[in-house]
Structure formats: C-alpha cells, structure tokens
Length: 318
View 1 (cartoon, helix red, strand yellow):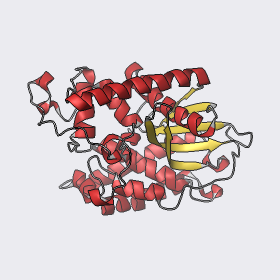
View 2 (cartoon, rainbow, N blue to C red):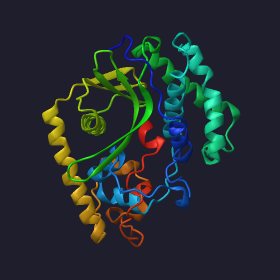
View 3 (tube, rainbow, N blue to C red):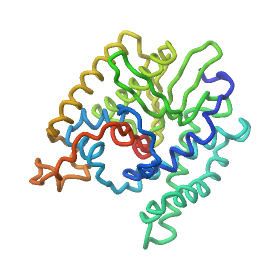
C-alpha cells in the first residue's frame, strides 16, 4: 500500500484546523454556548484512561481538571501538525527540508492560538527553544526513513471518525492518517513521537488502533487491512492486521466498559487503580491512593460530548 492510494479527498474545510484551535491543550475548550449538545461518546483516549484508572477518567472527563502539558507532549503536537501540513503540499514538495521549514510557522500558529503553550519556555534562553524545535526536526527526519510521502495520497489526515454501535454507544475519535488503495484496502496510520513501547504501552496503542478499525468497520463495512504505528523517536514501525471476528469481540469489550463507566457515573464511585503509570499522573495530590482527597463529585455530565468524548491533540500526539 505504499504506492498511490486513491486520490486525496481532504476533510471538510476547517474541520482539522478548528479542532486544533479548540483542543491544543488539555482542558482548553470552546465556551459552553458554542459547543454542540450531542450524546456522550467514548474516545480512545478516555477509554484508555478508564481502563488504566477509573479515577483518572473521572478527573479528566468529568471534573475536567487542568493538566499542564510537558514539552515532550507539545513537541508531539507540533510534529503531528507539521505532518498534516506536509500532506497538503504537492507530492514533489514533501521532502525533509520542506518539513523542517514548516516547524517555525506551525509553532507560531499554535502559540498564537494557545498562548499558554509558549509559557513552557518562559524565562528560558532562546537557544533552549531552538534546541527543542531542532529535536522536533529530528523526529521529522526519522519519519522520512519509514516511508516516502511523495508516493502517498492519503484520503484524509486528522480525520474525525465516529460510529454508533447496536447498543447505542457512540464512538468518536481522530485518525492521524487514512490511506485507501485503488483496490479498496484501508490502512490506518498513527504517528507516535516516543520510542517503540514496552508491553503496557504497546497494548494501549493497539487498543487505540482497534478502536479506529472498529469505527471504520461500522461505517464502511470494511476491516482495515493494516493498522500501522510509526514510532519517530527510534524509527520503528509496528503493523497489525485485525480480523472482523476480533473487532466484533472488541465491540463487546467497549460496551462492557461503557456500562461500567455509566454505573460509576451514576454513583460517583470512580476508584483509583495504582500502578507504575501513577508516576506520570498530574493528580496524585487528589488521589486517595496517595493520601489525597478528590474534589466533590459534580455529577454525570450528560449530554456534553466535550466532556465524555473529548480528545485533545495532546492525547493523540503521545
């Protein structure tokens, strides 16, 4: 599938850019009056949160507690944005030097839309920001060792995908890139700016990809022939080939998870699940597992999808 998939069919004008502007940083959303009031949905990121730790799901999806992004997370956002822009260029211009040229304007645009991102370098030497942007450039260089974007015409980049299951559960997420070959084969591509994961992180990444594959099965009636994860820190790529039976079983897993989320949502009983991943959690001070006390439970937030279905660019860039 590395040669000439179907001609590009870009997403509706403003979809990707509008999403980027509204959700660049965790906790930054459009004013309530501007949000469409739709049914709650499940996204790969929030499903992963609940699977990892129900209390983390509550903090992010219900309480919407702010989280200060790290430089590594924001770098991932920048790299994703550059790769999206790269595929807007004519094929012959999709070269490493051209990708690097996009770094400064993309960073300027992101910080203009979300000034708090620039605060990550407040008081830092100018060379520190330059070095950080250079590290993003190195990730882009690695991308070109994994595939030649001049030979690809994706159907979509940063594409919103959503589907309703028979149970009524609404699935919603954003796919980094969707390739469709002339023969109709579908490939889902996801960029990761970290290194190829160990077992726990790999399972979470495959969970995310199966989520997208299920949505495409429900909306297109096609099982993606490939789910491809590209790790730009070390130049590794993982390819997974799902089958329909596996995705149908995965659907039942999501139904069971959503039932558990709704049950916890009614009672407010979102329990912590301590693990090694707690070392990276922003909310230890409020977690009972670390002697903290969560804020008073605000109640289940229906029907606002900006709460239960939201995925930020930071979620997807990790």
